[in-house]
Image (tube, rainbow, N blue to C red; front, top):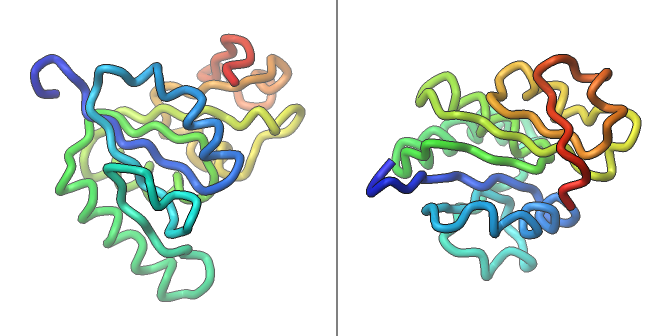
Length: 152
């Protein structure tokens, strides 16, 4: 934390997950932030940002993503990592928590009405704040999930 402001890593894949992240951007002002997402035309204007290659296409991609994420987080040193999903959150959350002790916050997608997402199930045990947008998901996740209404 510098000058009383948090540094926040905003992590999201493209499409609806990124749209949900952009909907809650006002909540991060006046903190400093940066994005971690996949390469693509729809995200070219995000700044400041780090762009990752999709890692689930090959064994090498799965292996190399961990090192890339480590280098990004070592350079930026965020206080908090926030994500709306999807799978890109998994390596970022795990590296952030294990190696850097970051606080982790996850917002489950509004599309997850009755069942938890795979990403949500993986990151839930590591999260400091885990938000769901449907009250019915509280029972599916457990006592650390929070429902504050539909945020999106």
